[in-house]
Amino acid sequence: MGTRDRIIQAAEQAIREFGSVGATTRRIAALAGCSEALIYKHFAGKEELLLAVLLEGMPELGAPLTRLRVSGGQGDLGARLTEFAVAAVEFYTRAFSIASGVMADPSLVAGFRAMLAKTDRGPHVPIQALAEILRTEQRDGRLDPGMDAGAAAAMIMGACYHRANLSYFVDLPEETRPWADAVVRTLIRR
Image (cartoon, rainbow, N blue to C red):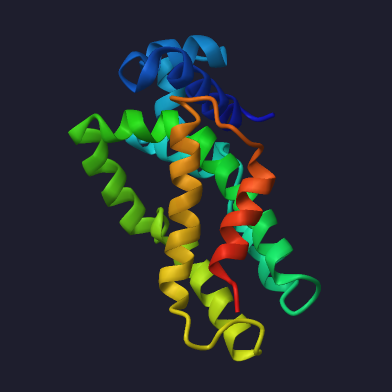
């Protein structure tokens, strides 16, 4: 593992243990086994490091979206969407503690928004990608053509985000996979 990856991993650990405010560059450097100066050699500031933790250190939604897109028309659409929803819940569960720390700090939010705008990344991108996949499924006759694909994608992603959020506060009564399957099958009923 390279230095940059070690720093990202250390930053994630520090945020989980101490929150975003307590995850100082000094603490991150100690956990990464490097100097604070080396952190700034790889990252322009704390905002950029936090963005890297969210975009590089978390399980990605890009790979599950790609699998969903590539498998279009093959197998049960509900099962394919369920697999994606399970991955989305995992992503949001891991990202929640980091993202909530960012949202609690106005200067971090401003920096984060600016960086997202430059990279054309952010929480809206998976929703847009999922909506396009659903539109393709509609055109190919596997989904109701009258369904609003953008709203359906937002509902799936919103439900996954909500489940991840709830998991921090309550013990959920069922496993994620059957829950995801119920959400997906309710939404794509024909």
